[in-house]
Length: 170
Picture 1 (cartoon, rainbow, N blue to C red):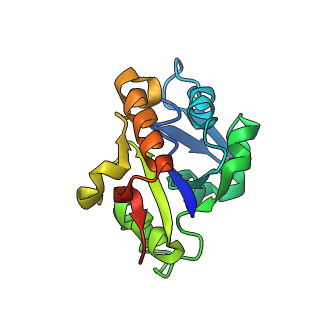
Picture 2 (cartoon, rainbow, N blue to C red; picture 1 turned 30 degrees about the horizontal axis):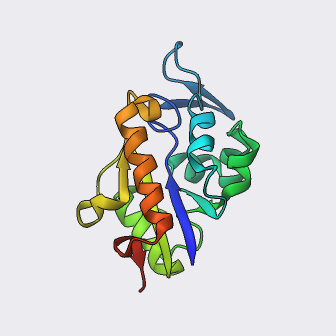
Picture 3 (cartoon, helix red, strand yellow; picture 1 turned 60 degrees about the vertical axis):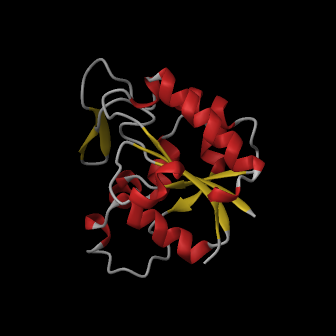
């Protein structure tokens, strides 16, 4: 059974949101470095070599999955990325951006079941029935919050241990 982490970028792997100018991406504030928590995420996932990453970030929709993968500074994280939530979606591409984040992820889950999954995101929309699968970050803090990191660590352990509440079969 696949183990999947749905990964958002802005407000998770770095604080705040990124801005785009042409083919370049910039931090929203001069004191914030893009992907500042990539090393931490790599460390959190290192005990779980079977964990795949599916990008649930607007980055992959707007700039492409390959661009997003290549922007992440950690080679080990890049190797884990197997795609993005919209890959193979049945929705009209114009509708996809207005769907809740939870709906985007659940669409992917439905198309790729069975799998065990967890999402790390600064958005909570659409996760009402799946709060136990969401590690919620505050946009201005991301994975810089030690309580969120501890919750993430615990949920990863539960997921890989096979806690039944994470399993999805459609």
